Image (cartoon, rainbow, N blue to C red; front, top):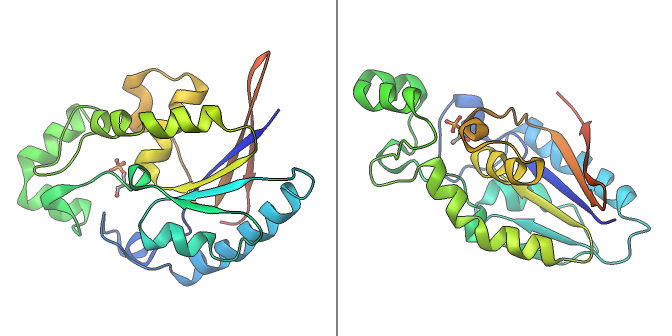
Length: 195
Ligand code: G3H
């Protein structure tokens, strides 16, 4: 059985400031995660022969993959974080204060709420379809380094979670979710590499 390893990028400078979207670099903790992740991946995939590392096109995922060597890396635009449109770069508090109706609408239906000039979770789920098809076709392990909303959607697919739960799935930083697809179904292991 070939594993799929899912992880968010290391903590970004905007995670620290509570800002969404953007294309920020990693925080100091995020940089540390990039080192630990490489160590983990090198050990975990040592006996697996080939494998590939997939990131989004945003620098926080590319920087998180930086220390992993010996495997091809592929950048997917379809793995980029949910596009928060006019809210890009804002904090949730700023959204609540300047766009209270949007804030409430999202709270009430986070799955379907579409950011003005941006995306909804349903949009993200749809654009991930080619990624899922390709993931299922792979014969060797894949490490997917992506973003919270994207990983909630991917994980929900493999773990067979209902759509309505997708936006609320816990997807902690600095944690690897290993998924094994075998004949008897899907098995999952989690590795928390740091706080
Ligand atoms: O920047 C976007 C966040 O990673 C997605 O989180 O859908 O819970 O607001 P959210």
